[in-house]
Length: 232
Image 1 (tube, helix red, strand yellow):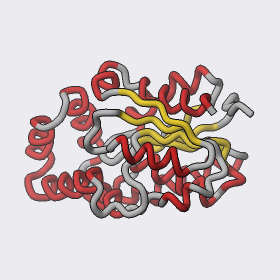
Image 2 (tube, rainbow, N blue to C red):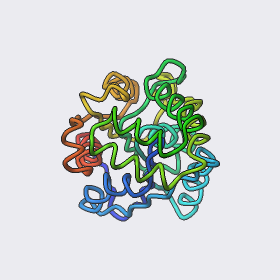
Image 3 (tube, one colour):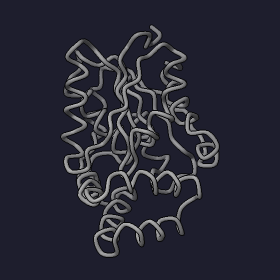
Image 4 (tube, rainbow, N blue to C red):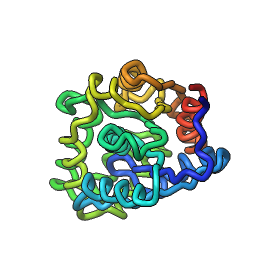
């Protein structure tokens, strides 16, 4: 049966160091096209994970919701969906960061490194260093969102780097359908992780984009997730 998101509150959680502004731009247009009600709560850097869980719990008080997000946001959303199967219509997972333990994952390593640099060198210097190693569009996005989350940003990055994503065995018990979106050329969020998530879940499909496409139009990432969901 096709997934119907018409009128469904859909809560989208930002990635590490990112914010509600970006996740809204990534998902709002494709979700509005299918009639969903988009909710993009701002991250609370001093309590990143607990803040996300509170937002999901609160949104679900009025009925079943769709959940999703980017990177760590996707991981938190997927774990919440596993814990609340009766309250989830669908999962939209963009750039899933790792499967199970974060220990050796590039995204977790990047978060830990950025947290260390921010504490050691301060926001201005760390932002300058980030710009030197990032695509211009991503550097602009992160410069804005990092400023908005300072000075709690390093703690948020550490919390994300410790977070345990669903393991493959857990994803195998996911009852909600899941649309996964990944970039084929993102070294921080390897395509292999998205493939693992898609293969493990009983009802899941994957669509891919490139980093250049994301830079030109953020909504291609959300559109990939929605299109994958509609593939089921």
